[in-house]
Amino acid sequence: MGQRYYADPQRIEALTRQLEEIGTLATTITEEFLDDIGPTITWPGTEGDFAKKAKPQEQQERQTTKETMMSVRDAIVGITDATVNQVRMMKETRDRNVEGVDRVNKRLETNGLNGDGPGGHGRR
Image 1 (cartoon, helix red, strand yellow):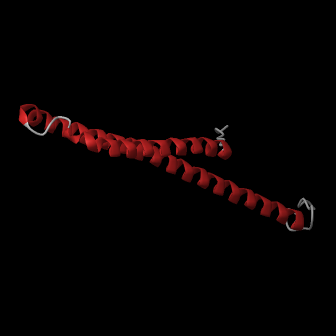
Image 2 (image 1 turned 135 degrees about the horizontal axis):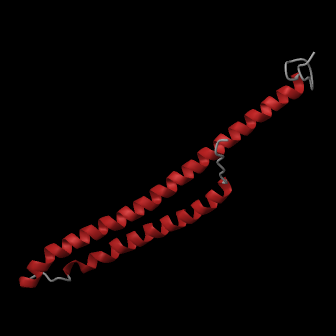
């Protein structure tokens, strides 16, 4: 016997809402981080040997950190969007199939199995 697959769209939607909250939080944290990092640009100093040596490393670390924060944010938002789209597609497929089964059942109730009247079973 083949495997059966079961999905609960309502439960997935509930979990997706949690993902959306996490995505919003990640976006907020990233925006706050990018806003707050600006004033620290002069921390290694602007003159002297230490500033000269530390500034390139600090700029590289700053850029890497920005890119990491934005990548994490984009990944969470992307996963959430994909999950929402999959749930929507799953529900549309389910609804379309349920409607198709209902149409066939109504046709059977009206015309019978072989078109021989209501409730007909096709035997003669």
